[in-house]
Image 1: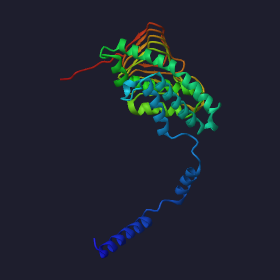
Image 2: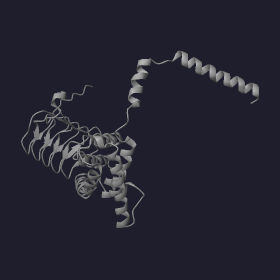
Image 3: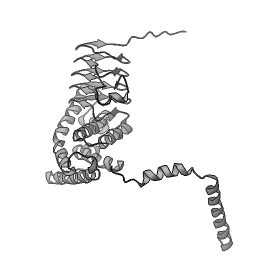
Image 4: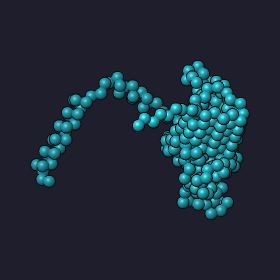
Length: 290
């Protein structure tokens, strides 16, 4: 391009910028409102930092999810030492929101990983025992979205017990975005837990789930009321040991208890307690007109 052409191009660019400035001025009050937020320091770690750190914890425990394998005990110990350092740094960035020292929390949390891993292996065993389509533990760990969501839930739930804010919710919402399974980190879920298919499952903050429970896609364990005044109360149901909840069922309310070894059929709407060994089915009349 010759010199004259460059002059013309630069003139057009300058003219375009002037037109944009003239025609698209945003309200000053709006910009000032945003500017005030931008000027405040961010006292919580970036979402990407949280996701990367806890994904590395998951991959260290479940190499089925990755091609990176550690060759010996010393290498694994070094990997977890580095994870603890990263966790300490992350928590220190939000120390003002913590009730204990960041380093102490990080150390105690890492010491809980063997127990978290043990419980997760019971979840794998439950899926293997209850899903005819599951061909191997490797397949469950590598390919099952229900197990993926449960990994992040159990990691988040353990962190929440140290009164760490925000971060546990980031973890479960990350898994939610990947799987369509929404488990609040505050829910209490015992071992041998199975999520089959999983898409659309919602498990609320104060839900309690016992051992050997199986839940299918589209199940909601929710609250009868969403009033803010109930924030500190138990708002979500209790599901006792051995319960199976089929697709599309909705169970609501903090006083609702589903007794042990009960079966809740598909599309059931339940807002009251049922005793153990109960079977509840939704009956629907289907008429075919020809």
